[in-house]
Image 1: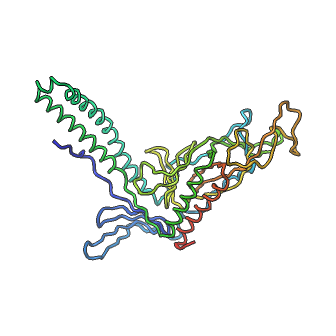
Image 2 (image 1 turned 135 degrees about the horizontal axis):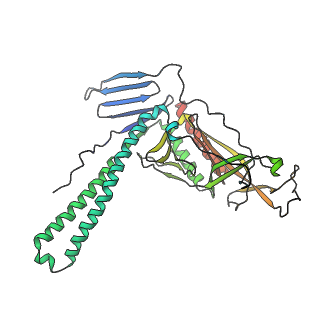
Image 3 (image 1 turned 90 degrees about the vertical axis):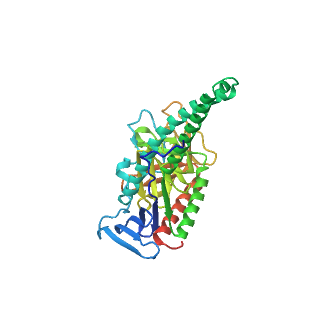
Length: 388
């Protein structure tokens, strides 16, 4: 009476990602056959079992001098040092967000993305069946338990009682097998890198643990330029920000042993900083993969005119007024003009030539700077292939 796997189910082959100074190489396959996609092109490799010999056939070779997938970052407009909250009467704000997930994926990771989408489609189908199986199990177990707890029916109708027992057991098996299928449908991902790079990545994760403990982390979701003369202020840029959380975690579409930095995003997909690539994840059907070399992470200090509560780990570095004269003194033509503290924050920006653009404001300046420094050390460890 055992339950069998669905006929349509077949676990996907594992993926191995190899990080090296030449970039990231994706290898997919089972047993002696593997398909490899890297900076030099696409090839299939066959290992002769028991002989130690292997055969490699190039299917496509990357052109020399062609466009690079890790070129310089785009020329984004500079961020003025004095952002401020939005004035409801001011001109319309512009979104600060990345391009669509369809546009951002690095060409070298297209195959990996397709496998992830295939894995998630399988998971979604199993999830639908699993939900129905849980309900069926609950009903079958409930019916059996009702008879089991009673005294009369299970003695008068022994055959029916045995049928209820078998039905409850079968429904439990169905549910357990679907849970196992759901786990097997996750795309197993193995990430290989030099030991020096591995150590640098773990140090970056340690810096991220400190960063995520900051009293406040905001995602900048909108911005606009400020006319300082007309609006009687000393700031050049107004922003809308929303609080988000940072944490170590794993994305549901990737099955790996890594707990990676997870950056919440209020205006698009959450970011997962895996070794070798960045995953921008909006939903199971909407995500992008960017190679490490394409993503530029930068840090800067910003003086923020803070109209909300000042975080415990932030530093007040000055004062200004809601309405000011050119010399910084309060404009006394405005009744009820009030003083505003200026607070020093750290800004972390992530951008890429393919359209990533994300900005975070962090109350703990030192933690933000240390994290970005650790990220750069990790990138250097990959690109150089030696210790730093």
